Image 1: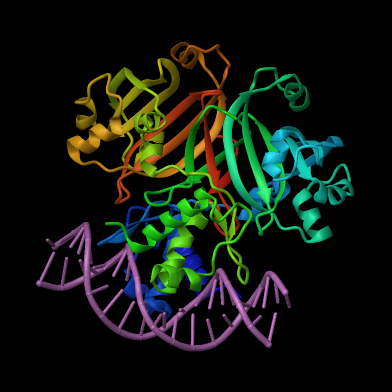
Image 2: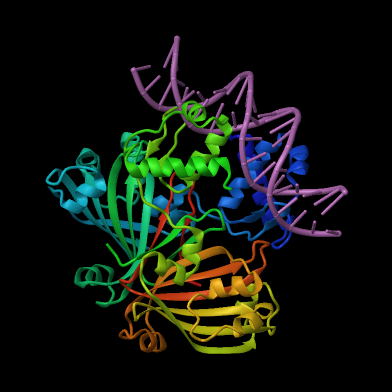
Length: 247
Length: 247
DNA sequence: GAGTGGTCTAGACCACATT
DNA sequence: ATGTGGTCTAGACCACTCC
């Protein structure tokens, strides 16, 4: 049973999708929505805050809320699992482990996973494809306490996230994504079947448990033209930041 | 004078930066923070919600909030203005207009700017540099009602955003960013002084007024290795989405 | 000046985590 | 069992927009 404010947020999203509140138009006032849904103004505010964070509506003191767009943003589950994302689009995801071995943590590993240098980590190299075409080269480094569960996975496992959830109840909660573009190196080029120097979209991220403990960090490289990422932001809610150089 | 909840949010950010609440540790309870700052629990919740949205702390029902990191995220102003961003890092931004002309809107322009095909738009091509090195190629298309103000700007104007604000009080509020990687074309390569086919990080976005009216759309291409973008997300707050292909 | 969203309060109850 | 965050209410006042 979802919370009332989530139900209202979803009702508003659907109303926008239906064109009941057209793009460029305004939403009803908070007072009117309170009456319509039989809730207090605070609950309505929780609902519209969600749409504001998604970039679907704009909000300014004194003026009615404005509908900015009807783009559907993805669920967290779809973002974190390549297989679930592919399935949601009606496409077939493939996955293959190319290399998997334990090694001592480098300084970079230690910093990102909040462990000591030299502690054991598990490194995994995977290629993932969409409808047979390779699109993504994934380099993961797992903390030692996760290694056993990961090693038990079959090499052709399509959904690591789902498998780990079913095996050991592991829940992932991302921290931060760093996005840039790099040229394909020799290994990248061979495994992704592109020319050396081809542009790749690189996403580096650290994944943690809900309690904040780092699980793994990963370097994902997408073949240019296969995948793009979108970020919604608005004044007062800005999840996107620009940084100089690359670590 | 900032709102009380913003003051509290900033105080908590600084406490985290000082190490008073170390990464991996927990924050005080809402009740304790209410007492400490002399505000109601609702106001405390507004403050911690901001830190949660920034990805600095994690939140789960029943458990204390956890400190996830002490990264400083940027202000909205720093993201939207290349010149302000460079200045904040102590570097010098340059900017030069290479081409600027009016033309009828294409179908793509019309859709993005919510105007009719054939309506006049102003197209601008700019190169921007950091400490003399070309870093960014910016292609902007402005709606006609913005064109006069943009045309009055000097060709070597470093901060378009700031100039437009001072001239006509224009405030920008982004909508959506689409991020991918592309190979440098002939023009890209010449203007950015890189080889053809070099990887470029591409950000496409539509900018609107606070009322939701589209001002301009832009295609920014960054030389690989000069700039990266970061997105914070967490379960329940996911501003990042993955998309297949590229428009 | 009327309308609307932003801020803040004080209290209640529930769901979940921890012990 | 206790503590904690999540949800919701009802009301107040303020800052800003728009007519």
